[in-house]
Length: 497
Ligand code: NAD
Image (cartoon, rainbow, N blue to C red; front, side, top):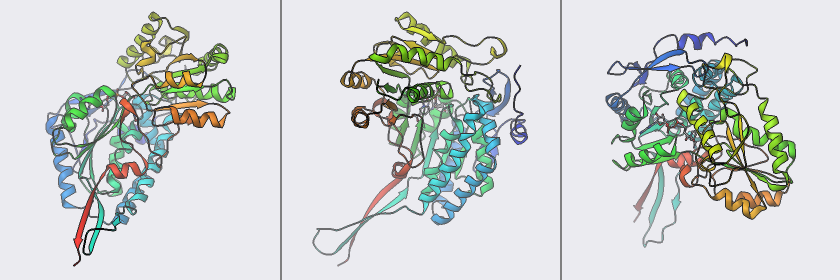
């Protein structure tokens, strides 16, 4: 029996009661009174319940967000004052970082060694965008029109911005949908995954404690097909930023047509991680393993297609299997755990089904391929799995599995690899392991993907644009890209004659 870290007492208190939604500065139940059970993926136990929003609740939240926007308590607040409040939120996140990490581990199962990073990154993200609040500028244009014309641009907030996020890094995915819109004066309605609302709701309390005016940030909890659909199709929402599957991304585009909402989509991936035979061997092993097994493979940019140069393919796969089979799998509150559970029984079944399909189509399973028995059998644990002799036409090379399963494909030379790596509907992440800098640049330029890591993987920062080519999304988040996507540009012409 493993020893578990005790749940942080404030976190314990937070989940000891049914969770309400944060709308218009008040904590409210769903109008229907309905709730959704929130269960611990490590053992299936009930953690708490959350209000189950439907169309009317979403409408109420949008009305409150619109009211807050029009009243101008945020949009017309001086930028340095907005920045101060956002910095206050960052300080509070830092102060409560252990508690927030514990809530994420409780809710989506990943080890504390993973979730403790998220409050740090969340505070960073609030500080980064607090900095932007005072740096929003327009341009002046020299005019060739006869007479004297003063021609300039202004950047203005869009209005009500909605965010819908998935369950795989609950706090961080949500924060990315809050900070940039707030920096430029928008108001926000955000919906977490029905599986993982807890840390975002606690963040709502911290946002309130920091003094962000009522109605500026609203949190609705509920299911995708009801609350999510109502938010995406609401005619008074000006922008929707969605992170989730490509299938739901398609629906978001359709629903956004109702009022031609601005849309940003961060969708799925099937990222190529390329190991050249000239790579530093140990670095490549660590990188290949980390790229797929971190967060139990529930990562949109996971290096799930592993391309290994033919000369080292057999040795590399055998070492990768050896390296990865010793990861300690367990409850996220056990400090020795490296790999936690998948989010749900449904996700576990989906991942195990893909392994079966892979084998039926001729792939060879080197390690993994089964759920965990014994002490952990009530949780949704799946062992790290390495599938060898995969080719690009197999289902496990084409479809996103979103679990700890890597599909390894041999290649012969740069040109073949580039061709194979780009044969995918997705284009989110990618990795290259080589000691040849010229090759690294050449391949990085040739891969059709939004993010590439060389001799490393899994790094993101608030100042660096993140997003996908092809069916991995539309637009970019982070950095100046988010400021662009949360503002309208107004061009003003003044005749000075
Ligand atoms: P999902 O698409 O099923 O759900 C994501 C969110 O959308 C949830 O909040 C859900 O309630 C909501 N939703 C579901 N149906 C909806 C609908 N019809 N209308 C509006 N909202 C709806 O995804 P998931 O299973 O929660 O997460 C896994 C997926 O997310 C993977 O495909 C993964 O690659 C992707 N993801 C992408 C990124 C990225 O930045 N590109 C990051 C994390 C996860």
